[in-house]
Length: 188
Image 1 (cartoon, rainbow, N blue to C red):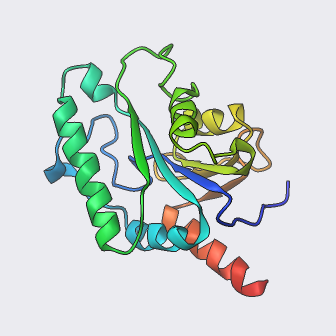
Image 2 (cartoon, rainbow, N blue to C red):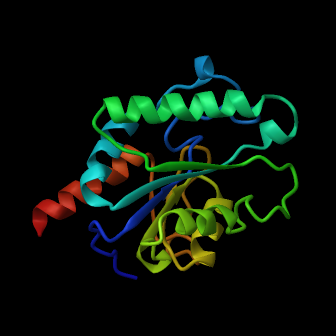
């Protein structure tokens, strides 16, 4: 599949942990003090601000459902993240989080509940003109269930051999993908 050319009619869906911020593999980001942006993530999201009509974060946050952190902790982390992204010249239009511990919950990725909520809140969203960026196969399944273009970030997994049924593109970081998009734009 050829890579689409993105414009303001497209929506960008981003996973959070391991894509926007450093992930604590095997654990959770439980408060703002534990949150740190991945290298180049703020710059990448600033670039995406110019390219995409909507930028939505969809994140599985089982730590809340397990009682390891409160919903208030999660809201504080997400609010501060959005604030810092805005301060850096970027934008996140909305953050959705699935806090259930059960994989069958309709909001928990790879299930499509968070995307359907986003489309309810932003009726202009067309899933066929959307990109899902994540660092887990469940993120890629989430995207493909809705016919999205998928970008796999290899922050916690080795790269997959492409072509792959679930992955259209893969990069070591959000910033690496954004730099590729800028370079492609300059060629056009």
